[in-house]
Image (cartoon, rainbow, N blue to C red; front, side, top):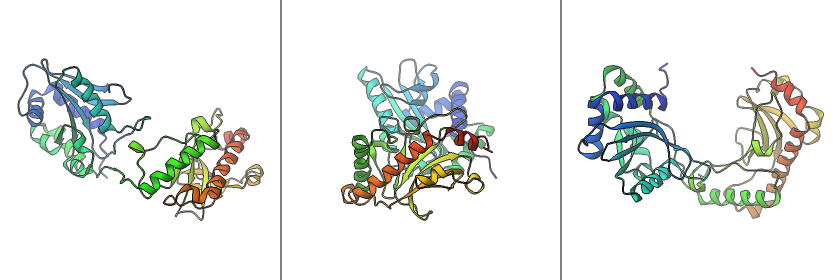
Length: 320
């Protein structure tokens, strides 16, 4: 099986090209600017955005301008920060801040051709450069790595907004904020709160929601509105790497007493309470009783977790 190529691998390849191979740097400049600026550029990696979290993969600065801000992608989707801003949005904001100071700046999305063609957000960058267009400026060893990355590239995940799902998740977030203050939803996974039609899972911030115990890794916790792979919708806490305990361990009486049981959840041990199915395409207020029942199930799991540290430590010690 071909070894996977990571963006950090191609980051390093491009950094070496800019720093050590004048032919590569000049070729890239011509692709972006139509010419090669005078002077030797300085090249930096992982420079923070202006006024926002996250970093710019590669920054190339020419002595008298311009500045090239490069986001390198192979097959990953765009990350979203805590403020709900996607990477393309952060690049736009940083470029605007530099231009307001009078600098000549260009944001560049550098990726395989397939990625650039399929990304709906690619046009938020000033320029687009394909991996394929750089092959002629690379040495044999670097070329082999880049070609492997091109073969690996996939269409980036960019969800198609669905109003029904967006309204449902916005409403349940507000309900939790107003009536369930001990629970804390994770931030939206996509920029601007976008939810696709098949978005059916409410994830909770376990760092803020669950008690912490030494020797117990932070789990994940969710409300699965509709789970086609399970007999019922459910709320569950998932302890990573402990799936084998679903069959080997007996659910404590204290868990059974709150309506819970153990089952596999991928590679995790699921501590589960079944709940009514929720329809993310229907208004939340039309199914409010079922929503409240599900959230009360999360509260029961939260309380059980807080009161059973010794059991959790015992299970964690069996991690393989």
